[in-house]
Length: 276
Figure (tube, rainbow, N blue to C red):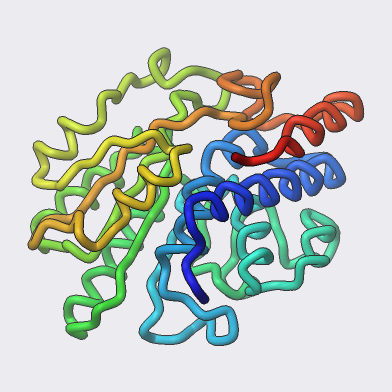
């Protein structure tokens, strides 16, 4: 696949947002706010950065992407369908009886899913194991993991952060989807971990802060040229929950909520605007 340009990526991300919105509306459930915040990151990874092949989803030399915030599985499914891992029309089965597109991703059912996620705080430790395996094999593939910012309250993440620095995992990239909201509250009102950058830097990581909806910034941060030898990389991606949909943006209630028919039509119209 020829990597998409930033303009093409923006158009792809908008298509993914529209299909995600439709899937959540038709299923009557989903974590749409956090899906909208992570879609630009997923789009950049799957259509420009990751060395993956939909025809060989278990290729030993592939890059790995772990979506640790597994409750936003629908965004991952739509991205995988757009990339060719699963049929586009299968998205219509999201959350339906006997569907393999469950509320959290399952690597035993869905091609392209690297590990089951859902219980928060598990994805980064698994990714540390993957990156360590690549080092032991002297392999060139990279491991990426996306966590939510509320998820970073889990102590298992900080144990993994210490281990990754100790093992000099410069083939590991952690992306924090920093949308400032978690289920039921703002991050600042629960366990105010922000700012993340100085904390990760204190553990020996290379830290890059970006606008998580700016494709040029995302691609620059994910480039191999930004890797520092013997140091894992953390990208703090400042995002907005509900990105692209005005009435959802930065609203805590849209962590887990389904739009009404009227809201659905309004959101579709907003996401249909031309990408410049």
